[in-house]
Image (cartoon, rainbow, N blue to C red):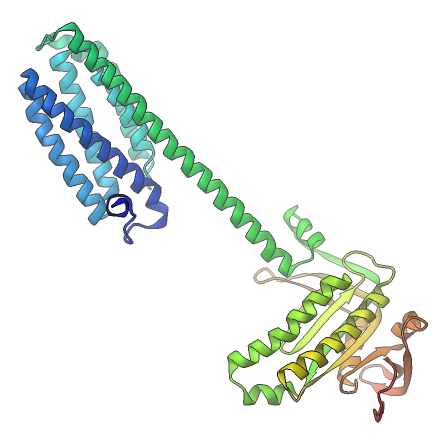
Length: 407
């Protein structure tokens, strides 16, 4: 039954729901009030107002129907406001000021301002006209022809008390609706702000996000002590050709979700993913003296997680990991879909370490080896030709597995 009268029809847009409830409640209260007036004026012999209330009841019944079935909210609010203004002008003209009918003009000023009008001139104009009419009722209308109908003092007092009480009740209802709408808007704004914050922090480091929100337009920094890690899935390209796209996404998400958890656990900054490659770094945007140890622990746990997931899913894949330590540059790139990225020779070398690493192994440059020796078991792989760098010593983290070739 509640939904029958107060449920919002699907045709009413979300932005108009507050206005829908305001119109529906206002018309429902007006229908009850005008129906009671129709009975009262008929019994008291005030037939001009009784006949007018027949028209008023028809207007508000029709208005409720059109609001519910056709969504004609704004037009019905204007029609209802016009009816009340004309009705109260006639009541003051016929009965005088002491019955309190003029107070409903004040209700219209608040009622119309709760509507969601695109053109603000409409509600402001109606509200201004209501205020002007209230003044005219007091200084002009009630004195035009005096009181056409003189009722006993108890009846006059009863009308005044009833109209004041209804006025108070209607204004309270409208104030409650406005307050509820404001609270809901504030809550939705807070939720959207928190959602935006979470999305922003999924894209940018917290300190970088704070700088952007503070108004810094271009963010670019140099870091002298950073360790960069690249990883890539071995055999994943052929696997993706054999599986459905949704299966590939699920498999990749299994690995990357595990890597993301490890990044948070070790205090490592995830930079980005490119296809089946995963890139992260330690030592930025906040300086970390133990950046190489953090990235080393991250790499060891990534390798273990990869082996576990590969075994659980029964996949013929593996992982290669490459690490290099040294200076990098970092910043926010782009205006649309911007990203926090890093670049420099250290980044390039870390990528080279990954592409030349053995299957299921962690290969590091000499700069990283010098920072990790003594903290991790290391093995020298030898000198290798590195693209763009000539020959360089490279190392592997961990003891060699039985039968493993490091060449």
